[in-house]
Figure 1 (cartoon, rainbow, N blue to C red):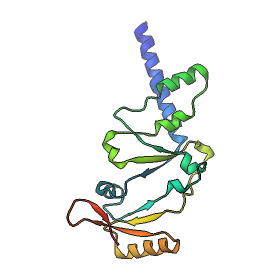
Figure 2: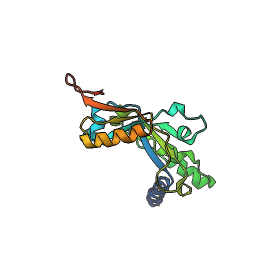
Figure 3: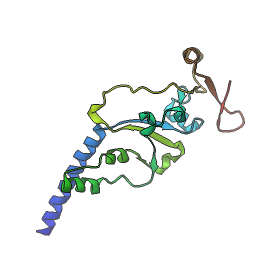
Figure 4: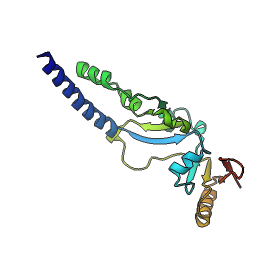
Length: 183
């Protein structure tokens, strides 16, 4: 009898966890940022082998109460998955859920990614937040990848300069396996 109760309880928790996870994911809007702009690996991963660009933002320039500053959190690097079970059980007992659980759940990432020094802008408003882009402040700089085609460099440079945004071209170092800021 106890084995059957354990099995039913485990299956209930598995199903509840899946439903909870799906609802949490649907309730968040997440955008990732990094403290690092000169990582060869990140330019390779995220900028199509150095053919993309990187927009730099001065978050400190935003007012303290600004949502774009208040909802920006550092990623937590660890081997374990976030375990929302205690929060789910508390919700079952009390009928209430700590709304910060959803936010906390999306801040975990494997230690292999620690080199990114990632921060996540998390809007935990779910369906109350409309789909689509969220207004960001004017970038403090635009960094153009080392392998961006000339015509694209001209277009990005002109667009950025028309908006008063400095442009920096990244280049692969001739002496080391690293990126440097160019002209």
